[in-house]
Length: 360
Image 1 (cartoon, rainbow, N blue to C red):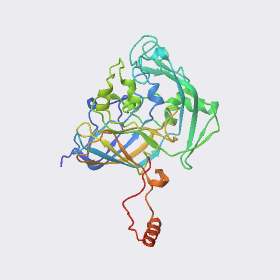
Image 2 (image 1 turned 45 degrees about the vertical axis):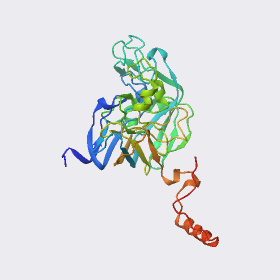
Image 3 (image 1 turned 120 degrees about the vertical axis):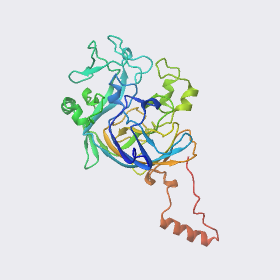
Image 4 (image 1 turned 60 degrees about the vertical axis):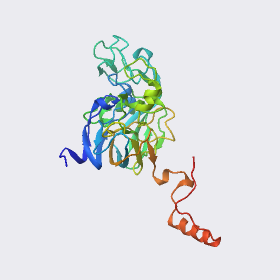
């Protein structure tokens, strides 16, 4: 076996908001191998970092031995742990002078017009991210309503904080966000939003953007059928037709809270090797990210990847943990099957153990 093909790899390198074939692979694992990683927050941090060309900061992709176009990869979420001590989030407003077609993708400096300008941090608040070249405030996003939430990892809860604590966290934003050393985003805690202090929230982390590499370079946040539609007809370098989008995307940006430890995601292989990447982890979320944003966090994660030969998919299939299934669709317990056998015997019917109701 090739000595460069590993049973397990650790990834701590990240893309600048893109996913696609041009990025290459960080490593190659065996069929059935494991990927461990520390993942920086998605959404808000990358959104206010004008160098980024997408809305997330995902891991560099990992190839899987034997995976070929037309196969599928079964990604089992084995482990996940929240590392951030706090984060900020909320509903957004945009600065139209700081982008072209799409504020997540084609950012520019409203002062000097430089595309994807280098930026620096000066102080805290929504004017803290500035263009290195001309000094203008350069972030394309701000908060309409925002909050800062601190986490209790032992009790799995979070609490929104007041202005004093939000300001304190902003002054040590990188530490409180627990950003890994190679992360290049500006932490959103810098903006110190502080509405609705004292609100309690349960924590149940999940992965918002996980899957396989698309067959053309895309903004990482736009590797999806819904968000990807903003690429259709766009004038920036990642604009494309709807036909092209549907052909190249792998729909890794699911943002469903069921992609958590114990779940299995079966993903299409659209480039040889598959190219598994992970990003956009959240501390919690309701049934869908309808407000566009939730609690973006740094997280540690581990997955196992198995090749399924000759399974051609257009997008991912999610096999959630049993408790996330609708009540009617959960696997039957031993006691339920025994009760079913008794009922079947009473009416001289053979119990069909391999059949059950389906809920759509």
